[in-house]
Length: 294
Image (cartoon, rainbow, N blue to C red):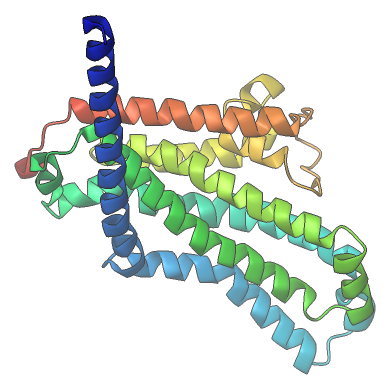
């Protein structure tokens, strides 16, 4: 074997070792962070957030079932009405509010919470590249948020249809678009967790007090329907809306913009996630801990 071939083989071996080491480090940090996300002292707020939509729909279902509500049989039990109502609930309550603020809490605390707890230096003193730390915390946050908000979405959908006409519901989910719609809503929730998660990791690293930036972004996302088509595209919610199976009316004051094709919406969100993680990796390499200023 020539000298050049030996050098090339040694370089490949070293690179393979580095990738294997990073994978093991990511797996270890992900396990630690997932435990924090589910059992940590800040986790209770996420459980509360995730239960708000099912609690509301469960209360409505109980009222319709056990209270004599006028026209309940003709209006509430219709599956077509349920489809439209759930589309509004999913987009306005679950997507724009519950997932948004839930991801803000999980991902901004990934680093900002460690600074407040005066524990981030333990990660920085460990022989772990800071970029690896960013990726691991992002994966852990996405995994936790997907579990939380998939349950929120699925349970809300179940409670929306449980009091409807049984025959219509069975037909909708066996021969109609029910399964496809349910899978689409879950997929949108997962993309929202990744998109908002990457954004809030950057905010948590850049801003000492991330509350005001988060509220500003929430306002921008919430008034998206009032923005011109060009500005609509400078938001996460526009691409998520493009994927919804049932389009909701945005009112008489909304600027109408054509939804992006599915491959553009999904591809755009994934590119956004990568860009945010690159920014987060760049920021954390220049980050210095000063607990006295917190």
